[in-house]
Amino acid sequence: MTNILVGHGKRHDWLRRGWTVALATLALLQVSVAQALPIFARQTGQSCVACHAGGQFPELTPYGRMFKLNGYTLGERTVPIAAMAIGDLSKTRFNSDANGNPINTKDGLPMFDFASIFLAGKITDKIGGFAQFTYINYDHQDPDGRWKGHWTSDNTDFRFVDRIMTDANDLIVGATVHNNPTVQDVFNTAPAWGYPYISSTISPVAKIPNLPLIEGGSLATQAVGTGAYLYWNKLVYAELTAYSTADGIWSFLSHGNTEGNPVHPQIYLRGYNPYARVALTHDWGPHSVMVGAFGFNVNLYPNDSSNFPIFGTGATRYRDYGLDAQYEYLLEPHTITAQARYVRENIHDPNNFVLGDNTDADLNSLRLKASYVYQNKYGVSFSFFNTTGTPDSVHYSASANFHPNTQGWMPEIFWMPDQRVRVGIQYTFFTKFLGASTNYDGNGRNARDNDTLFLYLWVASW
Image 1 (cartoon, one colour):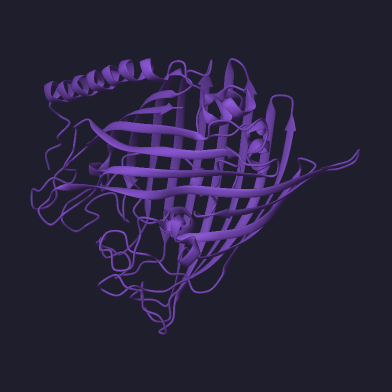
Image 2 (cartoon, rainbow, N blue to C red):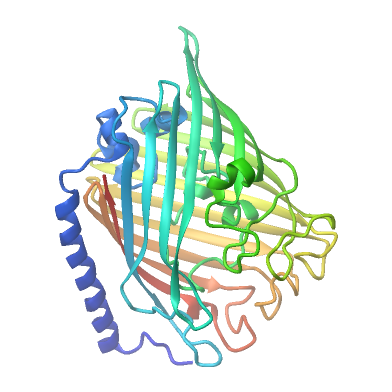
């Protein structure tokens, strides 16, 4: 196959076009956001750097974690509205499938990706929340190939919190209602807030193709979680949450997903599904460290060919166990952060709703990432990912050897000229894709053909 990145002239042309659009947009957007302050910064009187490590949203500092654990209630009530938008460009190393059709129809083209509106902040001294609503500009294509947009509820987290302080103890006790497993977590090892914080949404080959349920995001804006947590002496964090279908009175948490929708069907969970989390933390000087573990047990009903739920014939059980760790060094002008997460999932599918060759299968995921930010402006990140699992001819039918095994690296450099603006370049290297380095699909496509260059402009305006 011919590598489409070989032509230096073409490569430079689309790079120049991409950067011209990005910088022009940046110049225009900086005019509108230069005098604005974020909701939480406005509420607390602190800069964004106080809550976000090196200014890199969404990584939280110890102060940022305490702000969230206290239910977003620190400080004074203020105007609770904010917005953000992302424009980007993605380029696939080899953008043709076996039939010569483009894999990414917007390959190498600058695009407005999505925008979000936020309602967030302090409601009372003990109640606060965070609600995000997102418009995805290139959500899906209709039968004629035209791109369609989509409005959806996004990350949402409401909390009731009390803090009990004595000479010997500092105890935070809280309750949370949210719509995305782990969105309530305060560590950046949690899948909902894990790296990459932004990546290509348009390229079908830019992401890891198979992940454990807790990492894959399929329950995001589909389930409602009601739980309780505690944080004792800034040392022990513990949480227990139950997840069920976000329908009925909770349907506002799954807005954008409906029964029978061919693109965004509602996913139904059987009963209440438990999630447990524990973490040990320690802060000293500019250093902060966390080690933790979590477990998630979920039973999902299948959908029929028209995307309506099938009740009464059983469910598929996903049981996920995870270990994670995080380190931060925060001392201006330097910020260093590192996260590690390992998840092992067992899929029990006695009715073969998902699996074909097995009734039980395992899936393992390892994610590692480190970042360095200088002067809260110039940053670099580097991550590694590796997924392995039990082969299955139905569940992993896109693989010639029916394996999910995918491995690779992701370097990124970024620049934050303002605490509300980030410009970045990210590259995804695949060393293995769906079980092989070469000819993984049986049609001659290699893992490195899916390598993706991703340029983005991320702007928040409050």
